[in-house]
Amino acid sequence: MVASTVTVPHEGAQFAFSAENRDRIAFIVSQYPEKQAALLPVLWIAQEQVLADSSRPRVLSADVISAVASALDLAPAYVWGVTTFYTMYHAKPVGEHLIEVCTSVGCCLTGGEELYQHLRSRLGIDSDLGGTTSDGKFTLRRAECLAACGYAPMLQLDEGPFIENLSNAKADRLIERLRNGEDVSDLAAPPRGVTPMMDGGQ
Image (cartoon, rainbow, N blue to C red; front, side):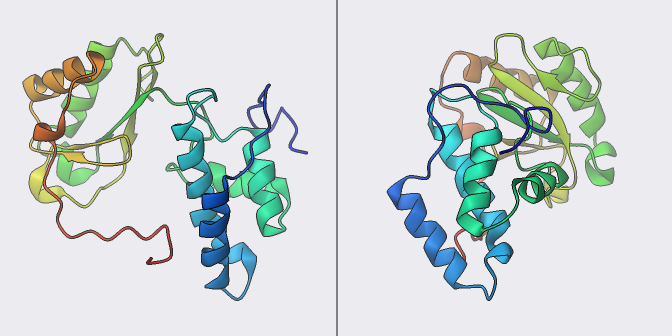
């Protein structure tokens, strides 16, 4: 059992992988000589399931960590240690929309830090480290290089599309549309042949 002092407790139905995700995990595990090697993609699958369930907090809570540990015959403390090492896993609750602004060198030289500060002010987030709006709608944080230096400044939305060549005005349009539940696909960059890797190449 993961102590509540280590990770976020969850009150309610305990997390269990869906049948479809159990099959995905079985396939991924079969690609490695040791179950432990599958930890990163299995954590990702768990997070996908959590984020798709509106009845749960948007975080890898204690019961999720325990389910991942059980699936891979690992200690929950080990799984939690890996979870907190990588920023792509939600060790803290995130809002309905996750906005990650690249502030690495390439983006900073073209206004990435100014864009981040503009969004922080627009969303009313006090901490320079980022955070979540009081209504739970947005989480803002910095990101390390997202490999789109030729399209800076840019951000990643909800761990999915890149929004590139940003100005403050374009960022404001993005926020306003998201707040109103409107489509933002026309603001997103076109796919550039990136292949998802979290399903073992399936």
